[in-house]
Image 1 (cartoon, rainbow, N blue to C red):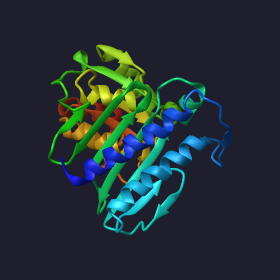
Image 2 (image 1 turned 135 degrees about the horizontal axis):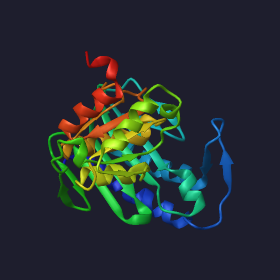
Image 3 (image 1 turned 180 degrees about the horizontal axis):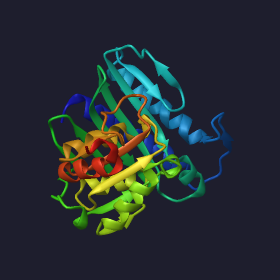
Image 4 (image 1 turned 90 degrees about the horizontal axis):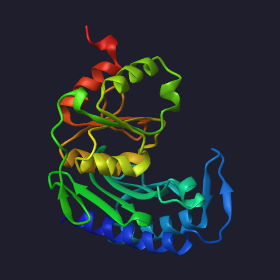
Length: 257
């Protein structure tokens, strides 16, 4: 295990202790300017993560959901969402996670995804494979849309676009449809339990670590146009390689000619 992943795992474990201390307890909920909720658990867990990462790598940059960017022009940039799914956390059900990823000169190279309520910890580093609770994971081989299990997450803007009909055709053709959402369907994807995830309306902090995990498990992870992830990415198409190519054409039929 490389030093980046090892430190990110330490940070995620420390954050989980903070999160569990508040989970299903009494705390105030504030509403941020973008109408999303934030709690003391979000802020404290991000502080713990930041201290852990930057004490080990003080020359690195940091981009956190709650504290924003610092040293953003550094070669190495940590991308952190301490509680991705704060609404779930506030409501008292476990579909939330801690996301920690490392980007090197614009390329994602390591990621840790921790789900404290469900005791799941997934991680990966470029070229080193993907793991879930200490065991190596790999996507199953699925090449036909008729054999595929597809999960959708946030799709509000997709539903308001010309792609809505394309998505309907896809879901009518697959073997199974699911709507797991959040970290959960990416863990299932990387572990070979579903075959594709389609989402719009995401933030790079939500998906950066998960992208590394899925790709190291043998998948492809892009936006809905097939572009690689950047700090501005807002959508996801993640799938087995053959299925990804098929779904990309189905979502972008104008590119098939």
